[in-house]
Amino acid sequence: MLRNLNSLFGSVIYATDGELGHVHDFLFDDRGWTIRYIVVETGGWLSSRQVLISPAAAGKPDWERRVVPVSLSMEQVRNSPDVDTATPVSLQEEIAMSQYYGWPAYWSMDPPLVPVIVPGQPVAAEGDPHLRSVREVVTYQVDAADGQLGEIDDLIIEDSNWFLRYLVVKTGSWLNEKQLLITTRSVGSIQWSRRQVVLAQAFDDM
View 1 (spheres, rainbow, N blue to C red):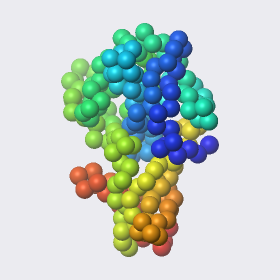
View 2: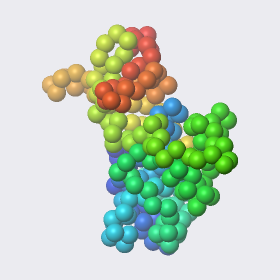
View 3: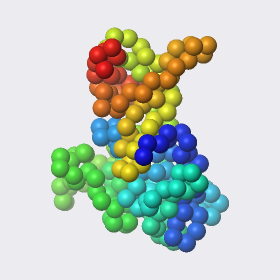
View 4: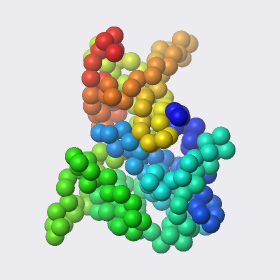
């Protein structure tokens, strides 16, 4: 089923033995438009630490009640590798989480979504430039080949596979505002430094 991501912020994440926290953000791969991590604000029980949870650990969400169960215990999360969510997540940190939790290593898919890891070689600590925050991309400008369309107001996710299906683009002035659904397949590039999404073709040709 399709869901507006803005409506999912603040949803409660439940571990097998208690409440972990609330959805603060989502991190997605900008080449496959797939959610890779849920950013969870844990609250007081873990000193308000933010942790990353893979959708691979999530059970069936109850979006009406705004609840997402995960197959992790609170103790597992407490002892998980520390990841600084205030900076770009590095591949090194992702590998540590994958090994700790036993999550699938999406970077090893065929074709790989990140450079192949060669045993014995050091892993770069730089942030993965393709792992991006949903909160960051909302409000980005959207341009087609034939002109400026507007800005991103929301993203729509397919909750069965965590794929980002559409951009919700706000167009027009505040007095004549409209919303357009643009498929993520039509995105040609994202200019992160310019906070801009560029479509691969003219809007009239879509």
